Image 1 (tube, helix red, strand yellow):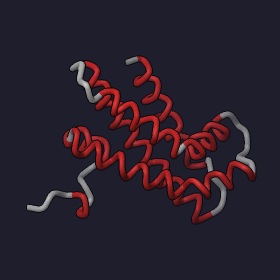
Image 2 (cartoon, helix red, strand yellow):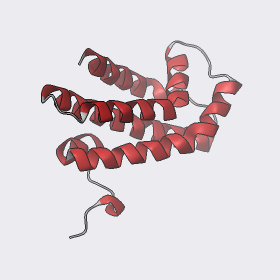
Image 3 (cartoon, one colour):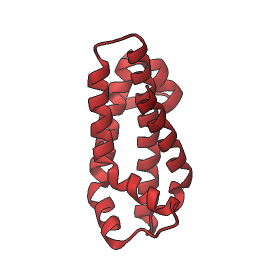
Length: 139
């Protein structure tokens, strides 16, 4: 449980400073949007993990795997935010890694978001808002 709490806090702090983490107009805006969404998704996933652990659910390990996959996919974005937060500039190498990984991070965020919406719709609504029309169950 302490691991989950520290992840939630780390994501929350990074989200606050991320608006200045990337350079370049349209890529910066897209990077912000993707990062913000993955941050919301990571927070929702952390909540579901805490609930699964409290219930001693067998799904906790699967949820930890999903958390790890999301972290791996979005590591370049988080690293850029960490650099900015520590007062360092985002170098060219980091910018290139962000550009290369942005689509993968966005896709992985959407995949994990679907998992969250299936696992716990109430948590999904709280952290992620209503499901996009394409993700809503047919009436």
